Image (cartoon, rainbow, N blue to C red; front, top):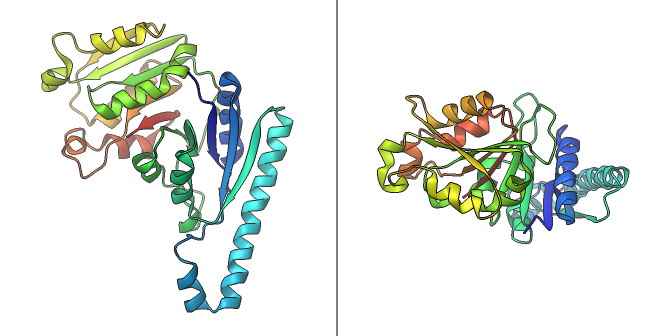
Length: 279
């Protein structure tokens, strides 16, 4: 079990080089293939509208410029992979918005690597990655990197958020190849007494046993907090010096997300460590 195909978002963003480097490390662990996906930023559904509103000639010029920008990003990606001596990689150019293109590519991958939005780096709306959208709509787990910081794989200290949900289960299952390589795995259960039906008499014990059968030793940490879960997770991650957070991804329209205090949004906005999430 491993990440045999990893898709990494390649763009003009300053964080692309760090994303590619970490994705390459993960691919090397599994002896897989790294796919650099760059999108032109022009939605495949908008060609006709653009041509009508702007004129065929102007629209074609804009599309050509957008494609050339994506091609330039992919050339940098290929150069970096060659410098990293990565044995298996490929570059893909898609005529689509970044978020939509990544969702599409996730269907043919084991993991999608992308970056947190950087408020200090203005990016055209059609080039935005929108990690929350990708995580919510992706067929596979996503690994989101903060816009600042230096990160290495394999991750040594991993914090796993466990609330008994299907989303958290999917995230944990997807993270097993990374969990196996960690020196320490902490399974955090917050406010278990408020979700007795999800945890049973020993919160976290069943999931810890499941992971133990995969050769992963887990330390269960039961936490009680009055602040929102997203902030509590990030605070606890700092306490245990985690270098990766694994969690489920929840939509804001769901009752569970309301009860969790918008954990997904809070984490994606304030994260300081990589986060692997699944919906």
